[in-house]
Amino acid sequence: MELFFKALKQSLRIKTFVGTSANAVMIQIWTALIAMLVVKYLQLRSSFAWSLSNLIALLRHQLFVYRDLTAWLNAPFQPPPEALAAEQLPLVLV
Image (tube, rainbow, N blue to C red; front, side, top):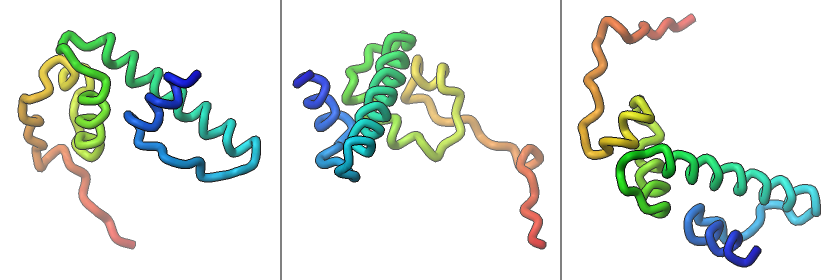
């Protein structure tokens, strides 16, 4: 149990709980557990030798870039593919 909270504080940068009720704390613990399991699954699926902290840090940097996740996990230092102008939808203001 202590290792789980240590990993939460170090990897996910959770210093305090947002809510103080029992329900709020349980929701935050379950959410953090799900996030850790997803990141650990991505680490195991990757052929690149990721450390958990490096994977979490680089995932934060890639949140707003559209990339194929499996291709990025296996070759993280390749530049993202160029987006073609024809594939982008026009912004329609009403």
